Amino acid sequence: MSQNPHLPVTGSNQTGNLIATGNKLLQQAKGAYSAKIRRDQPTALVFLIDQSGSMNEGELDIEGVSMNKASATARIINKTLSELINRSTTREIELANYVYVSIIGYGLNGKVDFAWSGKLKGKQWVGIVELNEAAEYVKIVKEKKGPNGTKKLVEYQAKSWIQPIADARTPMLAAMTMATKLVDEWIKNGHQNSYPPVVINITDGEATDATNNELIEAAKNIKQLRTNDGHVLFLNCHLSDVEGKAVIFPDDIGQLPNNSYAKTLYEMSSVMPDVYNDIIQGQLAVAATKSSMRGMSFNTDGSRLIKFLNIGSYSK
Amino acid sequence: MLGFEFMWANAVKPRETIMQDARFIAAHQLHCRYAAVADGAGGMGVFVDKWAQKLVNALPDMPFATPAHLADWLLPIAIDFFETHEPEAEQKKLTELFWDEGSAATLCALWLNYAEQERTLATYCIYGDSPCMRYQPNIGQLMMPPHLSRLSDFSGRTNLLNWSAYHQFKPDCCHIHSFEPVAGEIILLASDALAQLVLTRYLLSQPDKPECVSQLQQAAAASGLHRQLIAANQKADLPDFENWLHNLLQTLTPPNQTESPLFKELLYDYYQQGLIDDDDYTLIAIHAVAPVV
Image 1 (cartoon, helix red, strand yellow):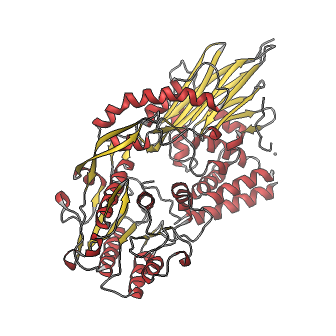
Image 2 (cartoon, chains in turn cyan, orange; image 1 turned 135 degrees about the vertical axis):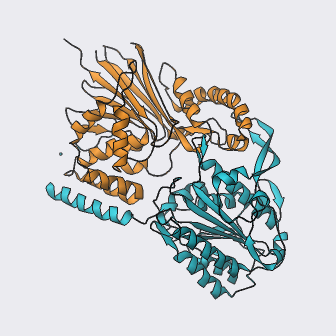
């Protein structure tokens, strides 16, 4: 028979100190990425997608299927949005607009524009409810494992909103400028108390409309935007042709290969708030003791890239 | 020989309509008494409310002797649940989520069985962060399970029972302990948000104990949510722990009676005051009563 460890069973000084400490901590807790994401207090998510010609190259393994960078980007964004819809469904009954999403593509015809297609073409922000209603479906067949480990081929319908595009140049600065204006207006339009928006940039190469320093300055403009709960987070996924070990949430620029563009994206990326430590460790087995992790991935494999996007997009 | 009085209550998460906690009490036979709470994990998989209910409804009359016994019990339940709900997942276009994430819940179950010489042995089995707590009013002591002995232990992700083979049972995360209840003690099975409130109120009632102060500071450092809850509880105008707990227990009812709205009203009031996290609230209280001589 075992006995549980028990707690001590009886200092006005200590009480006073405890209360003072508590008040201080409560004050510090404000603006600390702790705002609840609710239907009456939604948050925002923006994807910036590189649609340049070079995205037609490369080979990424996404859930056991090999595909080029443009197809991989479309697949993982569709999967992330699908996951967001699942998480926004209140106890499997009612879908609610907990998150508003925008997708900005840069490179198609050398320009920057909202990348929604089909029923959502021309839209800027799309709430989760409308996102779900506008989904197209593609048939997927994959091998899955049942509860006793037995495998079988399972056919299901996966939701899809964007198609892979790989066209011309890489006007990334113009995309970032557009995102800055979009998010700034969203915050000012009654969302000052919301959980801070997240902007996620997925790219494979150098920008063709800016120097590295200009990109870093533009990233500062995004990161300076804030709600009362904290600064906007800017995350970058680098799908590079440069050889180098996969890196995710690095805490030191030296972890990246000697490539100026990878290092620029590192400098552009937000330092992840401490509240993300647990989930980053839990999802990606990255040490939670790091206090200066940047929201960046470099040549990460498909499954970890999906987790990176899920972490950034409130899906997990 | 001790007698045991069972009381319970639950309240759905504020602004929600579907409860994802499940509870069960079997107290009708002297040789077969047990109670359980399961907390469906809303952030993982689908049909979590049904899975939590399935777990508590399927408990055996006797406690699990080892984690391996729980694993053996779990597999046929997992297969049955999967086969029952796969068609529903397909109909609701949730197939991928159903297969990949399954359905997940915590489990806290307590059995009361006779030992020799009219003693009663209590055995609990916990998987996850829904604890079995023991409060002994005569010495003013609250006991927590070893893996949830500190408030900061409730921070971060917890382990969950899942039917899916992608989220396998971990024997090291299954905690089985036995103890002999004493007359007057109150055994509490609770889902995590309410358990944390109980522990917080207890720790705040012991300002002269460095261990309690240390726990509060550690929890506040570990999580912004804990910081906010602790600070709000410090400011709240509430009685000392024993009277506060008494007031809470007064809102529970025996399992064979119609529940009153008092528990829900009280917990929602605590939520409005920022004293407790936004979640489902479930509590089972088992009062060990001395025999009448």
